[in-house]
Amino acid sequence: MNCPLCKVPLIAVERERIEVDICISCRGLWFDSGELQLLGEVLQIPLDPSVLTKGPCATSERPRDCPRCGKSMIKCEIPAARRVVVDRCPSDEGIWFDAQELGAFVDYSAREHGSTHPVATFLGETFGRRA
Image (cartoon, rainbow, N blue to C red):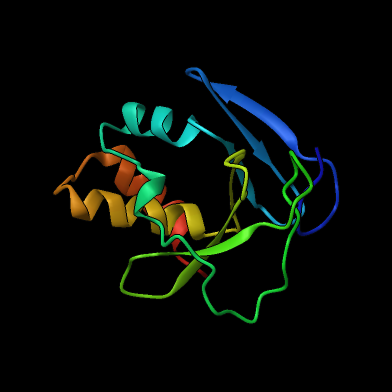
């Protein structure tokens, strides 16, 4: 599978039943369908992709192809204070997070559920804030 942004091969990393495909070039992350929910179980907060806007949302980002099925992905927003747009496969194969977008999603989900779980906070800080 190749990165929808850089077109380089993604590296599969697995831990605690969760396989995430990572682009070492742009630091983007691909979650297959159901993997976000598994991450949520580990973090002890619900990570529900259904909270994303159904899209398409207006953005200047170029369309990207799904690394699984090759179809053009739908731009969806995380309902957060700052505007964050992620890419969702139209066939529900998965979701692509550019660098920092996963952190924004984890931050949003943790706040919505009143969580102060240290791992969720760590992920939000690590993947959510730009230097």
